[in-house]
Image (cartoon, rainbow, N blue to C red; front, side):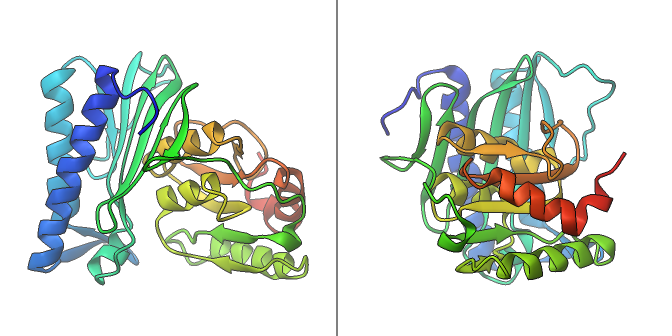
Length: 273
């Protein structure tokens, strides 16, 4: 892979992602046992084991660093972001995983003084590595990533996600899909793993991706992939992403304004102060 993998943080991220990926495949082979965190929101023993493995590795090498991870439900307090922060999704796409669908990922990002320095999104079922470093570009295995160059929605696919809430957000998402089809898009895709969806924007597979509520562990690594591939990532209201639950819009940059206009018409009421 033709990028700087020599930093201790990137070396650790690779190690943690590989070990966690191996663990997930072991659980998948044995059969997945899940429980519900909330309506239609599953957690498995594999999620918990993967997160424990990653956290233990980070604490071994960087004991003073802060870790924000999904299953431990750690929350950042106050407005100050820690100097050294790891944002971890040990298994993005648990529902896919639980049903034996080989589209899930380990997502790990390292943030220094509020800026993401490296990110990995790894699908162990396909041995797909999406990796980015700040200033070093975004890569899929050994291929440099560049976002698609479409300037019209009629030239591309759009990826999307549904939040677990099946009320107002679901209705707004459906309204946005309806509006998008009127632009002549080639289609929409909903694969259920936001980190990989963002990677697909970076890879040029999607012209844009949106979801009306994601957590930092869902987008921290994927955001860097998109930006280093030449794309743009904001909230669905066009604002900078916070390290908190928020809406996410990622695009190749050319389509960002058009997507924001559509979202404002169909879901703008969700994002007003």
